[in-house]
Amino acid sequence: MLQIHTIRENLEEVKRKLAKKQVKHLSDLDTILHLDDKRKQLKVALETNLAEANGIAKKMGELMKTGARDEAEKLKARSGEIKEHAKDQEAQIKELDEKIYQLLVTFPNLPNDSVPEGKTPEENENVYEWGSIPTLYEGAVPHWDLIKKYDLIDFELGAKITGAGFPVYKNKGARLQRAMINFFLDEAIKAGYKEVMPPILVNADSGFGTGQLPDKEGQMYHVNNDDLYLIPTAEVPITNLYRDVILKEEELPVKNVGYTPCFRREAGAWGAHVRGLNRLHQFDKVEIVQLVHPDKSYEVLEEMVKHVQGLLEKLELPYRILRLCGGDMSFSSALTYDFETYSAAQQRWLEVSSTSNFESFQSNRMLCRFKPKEGKNQLVHTLNGSALALPRIVATLLENNQTKDGIHIPKALQPYTGFDFID
RNA sequence: GGAGAAGUGUCUGAGUGGUCGAAAGAGCACGCCUGGAAAGUGUGUAUACGGGAAACUGUAUCGCGGGUUCGAAUCCCGCCUUCUCCGCCA
Image 1: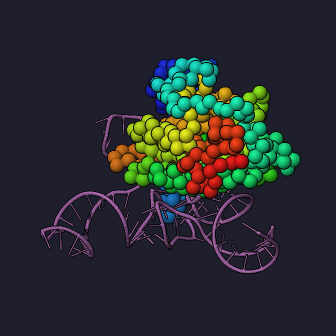
Image 2: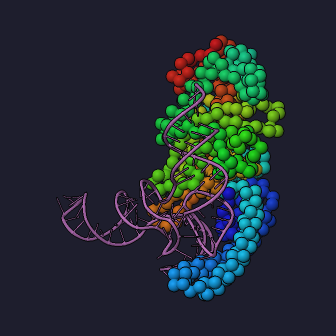
Image 3: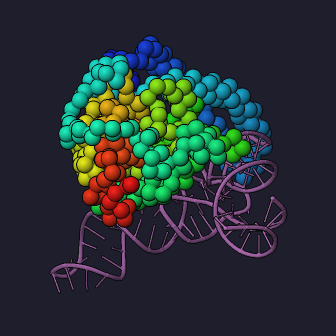
C-alpha cells in the first residue's frame, strides 16, 4: 500500500509512475488527499475535545477527594456535551478512514525508474540470455508425452481424486520432485538463507499483508468454514512472519527460504498453452524471501537474481531474464525479473521464476519496520524470488534432455535423485 | 470437543476505578569509576498519528473489539491466543 505522505509530497511524480503501470483512475489520488485533509482537521478538533474531557476527568478526581459536590456536577454536565460531540466526530473520521482506505488499496506499487514502458508481455525487456538451445533428436516429443511414456506423472488419476490441474507424481517422477526440492533448499542454505517450513493455510490478514487481498481474492482457494486461504506462494506465510514486527537494524538482512506446495485457482487462465505441466492448480516451489534495509534493496535484488541464475546453470537449462514492463508487473512489485527456460520440444519459453523488489509496499501493509541506529523507525524493504518453481523446470528438463533411449538427469541433481537416467 | 487458569513495555513482573504510558528488577545504550575488565554508579530506553523552527506538546494504545463510568490496565459482554486437566487422534 502506498503511503499517503508519499502521495502528498510527490503527487505529480506518483501519477507519472502509476501511469507506467497502466493505472487509469489517477484523479482518485486527488480525492485521497482531499479526504485526508478533511480527516486531519476533524482529528485535530476531536483531540482538542478529548484533551478537555481528560482535563475534566482529572479535576473530578481531585474534587471528589475534597468533596466539592456542586462543582463536580457542573463539570459532569460539560463532560457529557463533549462526549456527545466526540462520538459524532469519531464516526465521521471512521467514515473518512474507510473511504481513504478503499481508494488507497486500489493503487499498485510505484514502478522503479528502470522499468520499461509497455502494456503487454511482448514489451518486456530481454536483459540476459544463457545457454544454447539444444537440437533434439528426430522424434523428440513434448513433456506430456514423456511423462506418459516413462510413467512419471498421472494427470487422469489426479483428476479422479481431486480435479484437473492436480497431478499425481509417480516413480522417478515423484523422486525427481523430492530431489529438486532438496537441491533448491540446500543451495539456498549455502547462500545464507535460513530454512522455514510454514503453514500452507493463512488468514486474511496475511493475504492482505503481502498484497494478494483484496486485489487477487478470486485467485486463491478459500476454506469457507474456517475463513482461511490456501497459499498461492510461500511468499505469503514467510513474509508475514514479520507482520507487526520491529526489527533491530543489525538483524537485517533477514534471509529466509521455504519449500511449500502452492495453490492457484487460475480462474479464467485456462486455454491453449496449458497442457501438461505448463499450468497447474497445485505445484511445488522453493521461495527465497529477504527483508532488508531500504538502501540495500536493489543491490539485494541483483544478488537474488544471481542466485536463481546459479540454479538454472547448475541444472544446465538455457534461460533468459526479462525485466517486466509496467503493464506486466504484479500489483505489489516495484521491479520484477522473470526467468524463462527454453523448452525445446514445445519450442516455447516457460516462466520458472519471478524475482521482485517490493520496496516498502508490503512492509507498509504489514507494518514491518526496523529501528535504525538514529532516528525514527523505518519500513523495511521486502523481496522475494522463486528459487525455483518445479513444474516448468521439470517440463524443460525432460524435453531438453531426452534421447531416444531415455532422459538424462543433470549432474548437480544426481546426488539428490539417486539415478542419472530415466528410462 | 468439555472444564479451569492466564494474556501488561525487549524480558521477568507489580498494579482490581482517579495522581498509571504504567512500580521494581533484568537486559540494552551512553557516561562515570578502572591500567583494562568485572563489580559499583548516573542517565536514558514503546509505537502511531497530529501541532511546533525547536524545546516541547496533544491524542490513542496494558491480547483484540464493544460497553458501563465524569474517569478503565483495573468492572461488564463477545472474540482470539496460550497453559493445565479430560476426551479424541496422525
